Structure formats: structure tokens, C-alpha cells
Image 1 (tube, rainbow, N blue to C red):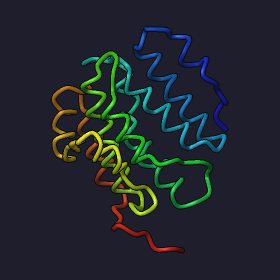
Image 2: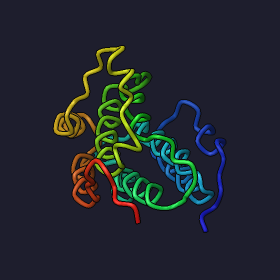
Image 3: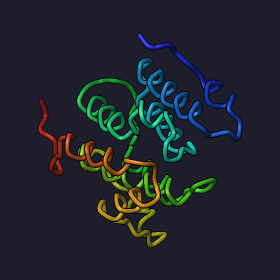
Image 4: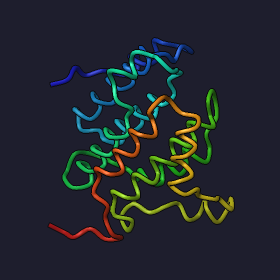
Amino acid sequence: MAEIHDFALTRRHGEAKGAEYYLDALRFAQSQWCVGKPAQAILQLNKSWMADLSVGDPVLLVRARPYRALAWILEMASTRDCGYLGNPVRHFQHLASRMSGPRAEVRSWRAWACFHLAEGILDRAEYPRDGGQIAREGLWIPSLQQARHEVAENGWPEEAEELGKSLKSRRWRSCTRPRL
């Protein structure tokens, strides 16, 4: 079993969001999954995308971008009792539309990509968009193709390819999932 961590693991980095921060955010995400907290695991994956990594950063050669981990968590938590999942679709909608801080633009595009990934995996009747926010704010939801293009242009090396692998490997669902 993975070692169990708390928030101190990522907070110890302060403002430094380099490779060690990235690895610690992934460790913390795994830890949260292992203790039955899929919603918290997703939040920690979000933190990993805050990392300031660049071309040639060795961590990108040994650790995949977190898209496949996110897809796996969504698949597992939506098909069995793995703990509180929340509404990842709504979460990513809010995250993408309210992003701030360093590298906010690319992080927003990543969140839109995750939004589409979540919509493709989860039952839309159980995990709907926030229609109130869409109406209230006149929110425009970009297409998956636009989000993927922006991640390719502004993200980490080979990040869009990793996203593409996650999109291809996941189980697309219709608007309703059959009950087993």
C-alpha cells in the first residue's frame, strides 16, 4: 500500500512549483485515493498541473502527465463504491472558468480538457454541468478540440499526446449508464 500523506507534503514547497512539487502532488493524490477519497485525489491531481516544468525536465521523461490517472479514478469511483467523488464535471467547469495565479491560461485549458474527459466517462444525468453558472455568467464552454489544441501549444512537452491517449483509452458513455 502507498504511504499516506497529508497537505504538508505539497505545502513544504512554498512558491516553488518544480519537479519535486509535481511528484509530491502525484504522491498526495495517490495517497488520497488509497484512503477512499477520490474527490480529494482529483484535487491533488489539479495541483500537479500547477507545476512549472519545461522542455527537457527529467520528471516528464519518467512520470506521465496525470490525465490517465484522472481517467482511471473517474472510471473506478463512478462504477463502484470508492468514497465520495463529488461532481468532477462541475468541479472542472468551475476550475476552468475561475482560474487565477501563475500560468492560469494553460491551467484553465487543462481544466477544460479534464472537464471533457469527465463528461466522456461519467453519466451526465448523475454528473451534470452547472447550468446556473452557464446561464448567469454567459459561460462559453470550449470544445475538446480547442482545449487540446491550447494544451498542445502552451502545455508541457508531449502533454497533448498524453491527453489523447487518455481520451482513446477511456470508455465513452452515452447520457445514461446501464445499471449492473
